[in-house]
Image (cartoon, rainbow, N blue to C red):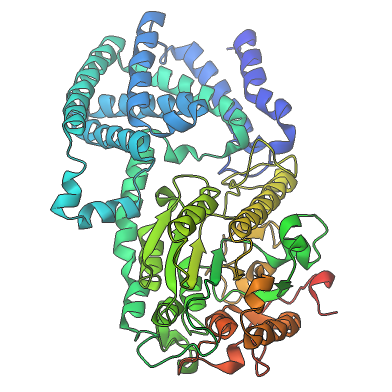
Length: 603
């Protein structure tokens, strides 16, 4: 029996319209991404089979227009109530509604009225998440869960307001009523129209997905399945969070042995900024010779010293943070896997600065983007801090937070240590001004592909340009003060340049692979203000020696000792051979990339 010509023509046009409109965004074989030739072809084949089968047996059908609109309207309301991304990314409302419709329809067909048992709790959690997103700009993650479990009764009662209680009760009643109405509509539609509606909506969602700006959001993170995934992932992170933290807790404090600060009195008002950045490769910054001007402000800063070849200890943020801030030379959650002489012998360098009179403050990224594992490690490493400051959303809030804190301490001339750790150039490369990107076309995406590799690399470079602006704004707040700004990234990223590898997809899969690539070579630099070098001849001498070390290949293992050498703190934990301010400094001799670009080699 022949296939109806008009439906087939519409189907072909519908499935291949995104391909024509966004041809350069397609990849022939990239199943995780809906914008794929293979996916479109499969959907077309399924559609033809459906037309043939349904014309012969008339098994699947659609409900009446009135019932279909009623079902969509009810589910749309549920989606708006229970999906936090409906508030911030309205272009995903249709996708969220479609996924929720299909989940609800399947639950109804399998369980009938018992579908309340599954849907009501998850939708209720989603509704709570929407409320938290609107009020506190956060979503469910391990950080939020652990804080909820660990808060005191007094802290918990802050959120138990008449308004919140009323909203929780009203929300439960509304959800129950809406699910009851939806079950009545489903019953009136019948099983076959429900299945037909679900397939029709899924096909429409597939057609529209490539038009979602930059494909920046994974469909697995929206609607009811998004809430479930965030809750389950948060609980999983809670179980995994203890390994590194326990290692750090067992280490003696770096201030447990006597130390001294012979070249400063403690009232000079000098500021040491240590910025542990995120995912910036050394070969992508212009001050190292990269052809694109990704770091115009840093490159123009007087007194810039850059280490072109700095090797990250690991591709994992928590382990890199632990190496950089302690005297470890290597780090592993199983310390027995590394030689004893490479293991840490003391805790965080922040404790030594605090013990020598520095006012220690920490500035972190948005709470909603942190995990309990990462934050648990960071809190342990930064336990010497007087206070912690989180941004609400954009990292550019940090300079204003620093200004506010400096103004509040205007009369206090004590020396200060500022630790910064925030969002930067991590996958999906979206931390930049997307209204005014310097490098176009740019695409931040969760599943990069060779078809639009250049656009994704442009997005990565845009994030570096944004970090460059961030550093400049922080230094503007410190202008006229004696300060030193030290930056190192935690690890790099693959940019499709190693057998098509993106992000950190091969982390831990092949031993030694990470350190043999440019993903292990991270941006690292220091900027001195003239006022800082004028504080004491020994500090100026240390700065000059630091400049001489810029041709060395260095690593994360140098920073604990170099931070001490910059201000001249003397401690039994200090090693001059790992202090880049010392003439005794020795280069890194561990595993490293074997494909350095020419501009990264020693001249």
